[in-house]
Length: 429
Image (cartoon, rainbow, N blue to C red):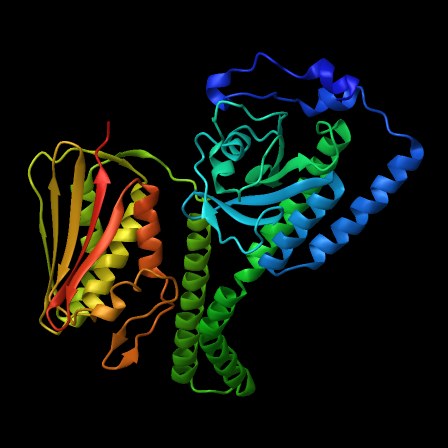
């Protein structure tokens, strides 16, 4: 053990929180650690080489393998692992491992509570455990290890834009002794570079979704170009034709703007970056206002809209605009997929802790094989044997808005009989 580590190791750390071990602050560790100029240059060259490799690897699986192999090499450890937070569920998953670890291990969920990685996620700081206890107590991620003796662990947070997205851990020095301040500095540096590279790879893997969006936008863009070129090519065009062309361009442009806005909304919801404007909301009033907005489309389709709610309905805490956006999507779907002369009914019910809203239609219904897919982004249900129009983002957005409010949205349907979309929300207070 180096002198600087011995000086700063905290031996009185609360053992009930982490069972045992020492917590190290990086600035304290490095305050007594001065590298020679030769070592500083060698380290810089090594990390520049690592950085180039990391940022040149855009396939997530290959990148994670590179990260753990690099950590294993530069720290001279027996094993290394990467654990990542799932953007959507908030769960922590062991995604890659190497060394004494079985490379064939499949991704495994690791509890945030009771794990070294969970502590690092919450604190955003690195952690060193010098020796495991002899009484059988273990951290939860160690339960996922193969059968080899774990003596010590060093973990560092993986960060992107100051947000911790995962943890990089190494286990056991191959040479006798504890993890050094050099090890801590190197692992933190590697983790800092890896966090950015991992998030870039995740975004790159969304390329299929971007391709679907581009495909969806291609048709209206082509129409706008064609109509505008036609109008510009004939300055003496009949004014009625000019107006028809402009109206078509406007419709396509509005559709483009709405689709892009929907995609951005969904991205913010999925990444947790959508800020909700919480306030006390009278749900009955919100539903009535949303129904009024859907009335013109219902009249056009010859669909009747009705509403039922109990008296003295308690208020809820919500973002009225976003909740109205979700409800509007459900109403529009209920009208669009209905029969001429059909009906849509919105009902509200409540108990002591939750309120439930149901949108029931007498329309086409949803085939059993599609029920598990309709909340997926870009998915469009079939109508008369063909996929329906639209970008297929509305229901995905509605579900995530409801989930962001602490609720859930589900569907029940029978083909040819209609559908019932229901969401449940907690009551205020």
